[in-house]
Image (tube, rainbow, N blue to C red; front, side, top):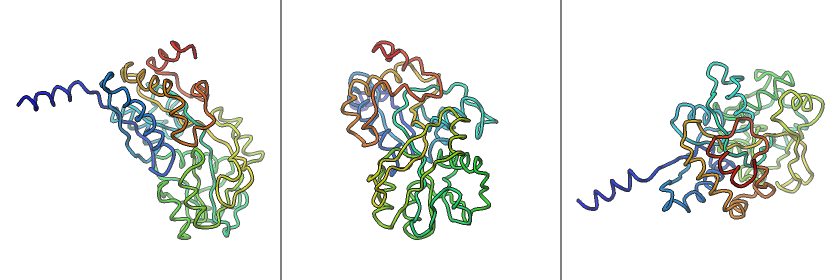
Length: 308
């Protein structure tokens, strides 16, 4: 009876938080895991225990936090912007209480193709089997935005795929796809897996139409995928990208958000070593590329540390 009472007491005392992420072979899942690892260092003191959940991706994550099924999640900064402003997928249901915590690392739109498909530029994808992304993913959202700028309709593709990120490398290897779009932090196990099995070409995304897209949408920025990161792709590849943003709902407690920011910032050198995508980030860069206002708990810590 005493043990049961102690267990119940602990259950009521502990505060469980979950971070919505993405597919396990992408960068969101290990990022959520890295944040939780640091939050859990303090759990005896804070009584906050953190875990991660694999999800379909950015759009799903925003909708789930909006419905308060999750307190925290990661999403592309363009999807966060659309949710807050009530545009694109969120026209019918804007998320006005969405709050940022930190913009962690750059995510770059990557067009991974089989070399034998002879896709050398974006316009070559017509009549090809291209994965745009699963429903509820940032992949799908950004891919469709890009195709719209190029006036390419999904119907002009031989196949407009909806594979999840974890399924894309196998689909490419098994010749079910000619290519796939992936908005991701680099390097990623997903593309390494594909490139180690078949000859892969990562297609440059550059030119006047890309420049116009970046001018039109302020959350996009030009970037390069470093050469030599993936087998057979030795030169830098131009593209564009966004930031991966950890976000929450305005009604989530200040203590929870403050604890997350404190855990990451106080252990920043450890955090940077937990994934290669974090190698070039700085404490200051966590505040760059935010497309929604900061939660008051995050703002409190940043102000204490002199970042605001």
